[in-house]
Image (cartoon, rainbow, N blue to C red; front, side, top):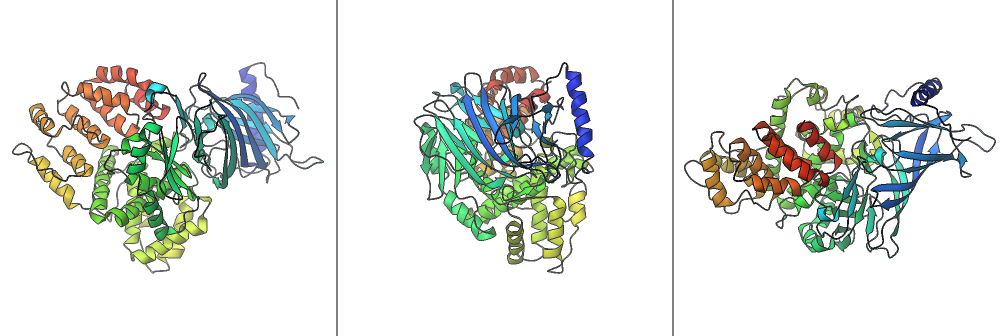
Length: 618
């Protein structure tokens, strides 16, 4: 059947609405449906992807096909995909590539557009089992970070990376874009000769002479975990199953920084069972990458800001490794269940870090993040429904659920549960959770049912579970981490008017807490004296610099440090560092400086960071 061509956009929307009505009368809506996906995988589901794309750096587009092997348990006459700003050229069904009728519904501001493809539930040859979508991305596709050579470390070649979480994969691959839908994939990616392509899959370790690369992911993953990076990339092994990718000029530094990767994997396995993904590699991306790390299976994406030369920020590697169990192996079924990815992972990260680097180090991490949680709850109001662990993000961007509630309240919920018995019992329970549910996506309620039957009842203990999960704010039995090292740094900050501290042997975590604990009445002269002694404005550690800029700007020490702030905001693309500094500039009467810097820097930011700052500076 030829593609149906419409005379006007209104007709398109009307026909799509009629199609929706006919489909929903075939079977009732799924009560567990993901509010952030148009797909109805309970009726027709995409199970395997064959992806063929060519990367065009000149036009900043990807062009090719996404061929989906599908199943149709509902015996319906259409399958629905999620898309966002894609140029759909043609769709075919079956191996004989019969041209299909499809409807691209008017876009929703958050979710993009539903792509409804007519399929044949029953034919003499059987039902449709293959849908092939011919398409191109747009230059402003939200998932794609196009970096000019000037934005890279080597300054020679451009760079491309993707960021799919939470619902951005639909902007570069038409898919059923819900974490509850898992699929396997193969990919063929063609890039300019001289560049390497890597994905969340089995990866090359040498540059291909013809620019053509093939990939295989044979374990089912969620759509947000499909990832691609292309650039001037080289590889260096750490162990037989771990290694690092980076631009050649920084490869040795990255390998040194992450030398403990194999030790981390072994430690994680000793806690919660075998590492199921074969290899654990890390690629350090250009500075435009908007996050600290992204746990793409087999190949974690990481920010260059963790390469400090002293291994002080390697907890990020432990965090992304922990996601190989909590997030990748067992995935939150919807973004309302996001705490199950991140709360579990923060807890697991700290167990890995404590085993390798000691309890004192881990206590600093835990207390710093505990204070961040208290500040966030105070700012949002303790009765705010967004402080529930179980989210309610329908109709909103799921990124609204990214914060300390999911990460820190979620982690402390698990600490509270751990303390009901002992570590051996708790670890055995968590290990059984991962093993029983591996390669599946689960809801909060799935976990609570498992918890009740396999932990609370088994060991005859009780907990205020509903208060933690469905209640606002922070329960009275919230575990409170304590760090003596941070306590000493805080005392030094409070005494700054009388004496500069002896900072010999301080870690970046102590420096961060020292800066954040400076008295509110510290004036610009005091901060200038402090800066002269400790060179905080030009620190080589981004965690220290952004914390210092936030505090210094708010206390009036601006003019002297503004050139360094400018350079930092242009160089760094990580949203965690950008937002506090831009916010401090805006809230202290320096919004014009913020806008001037942003206009200069925004071309090097990924859309995730760029959009957040544009909203802030309106």
